[in-house]
Picture: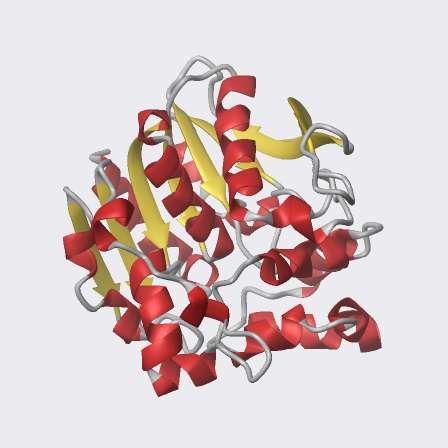
Length: 309
């Protein structure tokens, strides 16, 4: 196993400034770890909240013989650029980061494997830049059409997603930092078996969360999106009118879903196969939202199966 850390890609992009004029803010630089040969096809592994590149430590070695495996810290996280403005975390900005990162690592296309918020942005990349993705594997990350629908129409999913509104609230980053990140630790260990969250892993996460501005960057992903449960003062997902035809994925897509996820419920899989030209869903019982940690060997085998390796 050879994972090398400490790589950086200057994306030639800038975050919006306070006046939301793209091109006037700070340059965007993404930190990433990699494995395998740079001459092999690119496999891009995208983490979600509240993780970092090392979410993929147990899975990267399984693919290094066949791929150039790249696992970035996404914008706002750990050692990547952490702009303070909420506008810097809108979906088009985050999608453009991935488009630029593929090119910056010496490739034109990628296989993309993505979890949680990483999956949300991977869906967007597939929709906006299908030419960049040869195959897409999504792990417990909802497609925008069923998610928007469920946030408005399904009471159970609305309730399960209320944490999004708490993260959007002013000062949420300070609350997350309290008692040595107790709330974030519980977020990672409260969904299912958490033997994976040992002392060394905990230290890696805490180091990432302690980076200046990281907690604000992380919660700004939630503040920047309209995809959240409606509140008395903010319609959230209710303001969205999404035509399913505009959100149909044209690249081969496999969705692997831990069915014990209590934040993203099985209702989000209803009719999902109709949202892609070649989209299949694999449901796995006995694992939660943190499926890549709870059962890395099994999930790695499922991903390899979906990639035809």
